[in-house]
Length: 278
Image 1 (tube, rainbow, N blue to C red):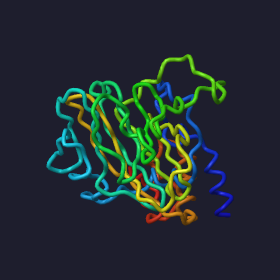
Image 2: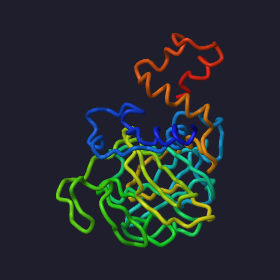
Image 3: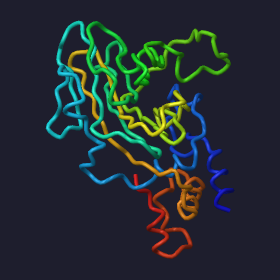
Image 4: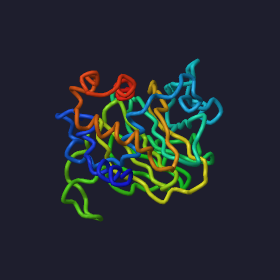
């Protein structure tokens, strides 16, 4: 029964689970999320002060200034330089989601969000997509929507409907909002992104297994402030049946009634269990 329910939930589009804004240009491009990811996004947040919410004070360009709490980096107004920063703690196993907050007004060109190993360079002269500029990093350039790896622009992400692999998309890039979610599945070796509560699918696959991967950003704009927040993680074990049942009830109730669990004909402990955690 657990596997059947897990499979059923895996076919629910992200827009049904999180009620993405109808005005979002990403909504037609969203794809279904797995039950594992849906449970993670609807689980209790991690405790405050988790090191995965902080940028590394040592693994960042000298042109990035770190806030006292470590959750935000701000790039100094430096000319002819591309600068990067990595999270303080990476992951080797499991499914993990980080939120990166970066105002579109403070991005400029070559604004990249992704992941890297500890060997990715964090500063170079000139203006370039630093995250994704070598074989040790994978990045999404927010202004052009291009995916970067090994120093090459691979393709536009998300892909347009009706555009075949190898063809050029003629539509303009989608404006990426302030909040971007990194979805790293180290067990499957994949990286994807969520914006406007829409999961845009796998951007990169075949990421190295068993290697610590860190959230990473790179910027060329002076004054760009970028905040990091670790939302949650999950092991590779199958989701618990109780959690899957709770998620299916929330899907059936809908966003507008998710706080009305007290009206369900259930014991009080179960009603409390079903209360939304985010």
